Image (cartoon, rainbow over all chains, first blue to last red; front, side):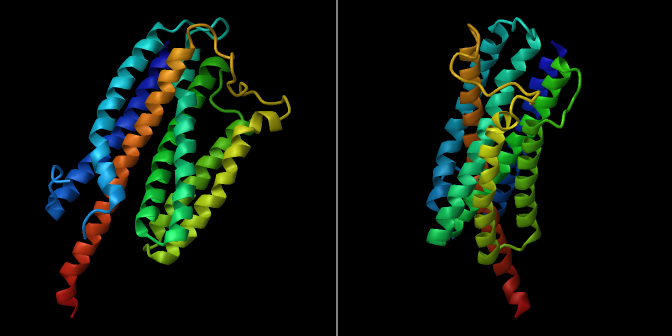
Length: 40
Length: 235
């Protein structure tokens, strides 16, 4: 059971971490460029 | 410069896709918990429901890279090159997850993390080939020449996918890796968790691709913005 939990935890951490990193940089650049995310 | 149609579509799709990923992941988790244990491997076989779907997403990413590269060569529009780069990056992420989950499963069943089996070796090669694609892109300063080279590389690299998929047949029975899944190879009660895993992984791929594509467009505009800001000082 331990291997299964480890496996799914790693997947969530890697994919979730990548998504959060992308979202953070998106917000930063949208602020920098003054683009309103709701406008488009 | 306004966002191009691809980026606008990615912006519209990213929020619904994110919500869909969360809903599918919740359903998938329930199905995996309720799935029966394998008669031979026991509970560790449940790694299958995440391991195999991630390589489908990686293959899809690399296929999109090749197709977008082809369209870039044909249309000479930068947005297709940005799509190719975004798909390659997300594909490499899923290939990395595949290469992490595989050894965990191997340790649980074979008692060792790795074997230089043809399937495993070709998957590692696939990962290196696309990692090299990303590194080559990051080492160049962009521009049409680099984009054309990346397009040709992205199309040529696609040849590793059928080799990887057919590795077990090519090994002629000497492979430690289980055979590719076919109709009827999953036991009773294992089909739905597997299908949910595939749906979640493919939707997660589309969600991450949408985010990464938007980021590519924003980075291009930010670079242009910075260039325009520097121009008066430069002369």
